[in-house]
Length: 306
Image 1 (cartoon, one colour):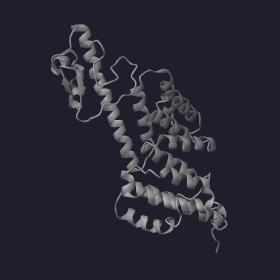
Image 2 (spheres, one colour):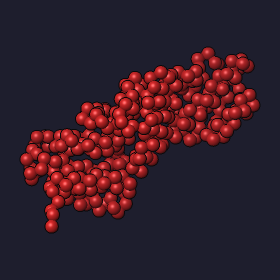
Image 3 (cartoon, one colour):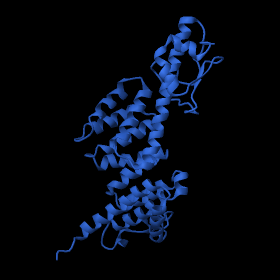
Image 4 (tube, helix red, strand yellow):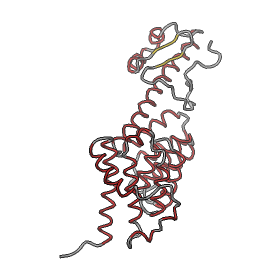
């Protein structure tokens, strides 16, 4: 009987641990999470994440350099699945991920899952550091420059860097054809809101665990609502230029721009005729992305409209 090689056995173990993280993201706070956390915690709690990185040398890994990384990864899996940590957006995730990658800099899935989790929890500086390392370490994986480009836009508003990273991703074999188009639009177009929508749509086109899918879907919905509100604001500005005053009510505006009836109805738009401000109960807080497409970028009329 042929025995499985240690490398093959180790690879299977790592796949199982990676699948555990996905399972935790899927089930949230159910019994499966609690069972996995109980088994993971019994091992991972033996290692303190506040110890110096050199306190546990790879030699402890029983002849395999990557076993210690799996040990830290198991602790990260337990941490990510904790409902309290999910609510708090995993404040210690950067440190835990650093432990994993310091023990094994070639733990590819840790870069991918860790980068996504950091982005989704608005820890953009840590996400940039992790994803930049992955871009250098895995030059043939388009997903890493794509994620890094998304993070550059989402976290820092750095359109130029985001576009260049997406072009880098688009040049890699097997990358989605849409990346080149999105990258070029980022670099040459002034319509930042449409660019943002395309970036999130592209991110969601790649399969995501349900928890992350929900977070990014909510962001996409907010961006689309903001686009609809700005469309109404552009119509308001055009009405003012033509009539010399603000619309007295929403219906007066829509009579001049009937194509916007469906937009106003879809977002349940509210119009304040004293200030010219549009709101939607579906978007309590307006987004303030820069807009260079001729529309108002903030939830107020342009200067001089009053």
